[in-house]
Amino acid sequence: MATSCQTWRPDRGRCFKTYRITVVLFMDLVFLCVNGYLSSHVGQEPPYTRDAQHRPVITSPEVPAAASDEDSYTSKCPSGSLCSRLPADCIYCNYHHNCTYKKPASFTCQTKKGVHCLGESGQQQTNFSLPITCQFCWQLEPSKYRCSNSTNCMTVSCPRKRYNATCEVLDHVHCLGKRRFQKRLFCNWTGGYKWSTALALSITLGGFGADRFYLGQWREGLGKLFSFGGLGIWTLIDVLLIGVGYVGPADGSLYI
Image (cartoon, rainbow, N blue to C red; front, side):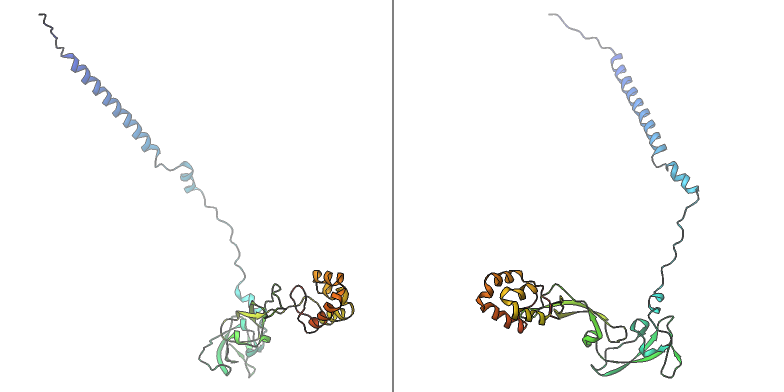
């Protein structure tokens, strides 16, 4: 029987070991090159940033200050008038709420900067006492404040409709609390229609729908026109309804 013999060559393992050392050295060289590149570029400030630190700083021109609050109220504050007659925007008052409702009360007030007034003796004063009636601004009479008027609500309706109005107290009126407040008011505005004109048209030309046409109610006017005033019955009813004010303008406003 033939015997196979393998000859051991000691240089085989030596060549494989040399190959691994070469690969490791090459990878180490590549890693050193990459690390050096990153350290020299990453984290370095851009050239325009370094140059900007040495360049002069350009600032925007100064903008003049806005008009002070003093100019806004001194224009409507009369100089040399009685302190008790100054508008509310011209003074500071130390209002307290422990007074009796609807009873006279006196509060300590001070004029704002740039406002000059005279006391009862005729001498110029800065601090003075202001006598007013103890009540909040929203409790004043309607003649002492102005409110916004809504033209989107129906004035001729049952029950009467209300709207949210923004009211502001007149300048010469003094009161407690906020001078601007909200209030629920009845719809009260007019579109220029006269009650006397509508009634006259209803009596004379109501059979032809002239009263309804005048009030802006075109459908009812055409109905009366082509039905000859509902054979007189509709005409008579409209005279009564317009006379008592139940039928009004189509836009929901009040008569003049």
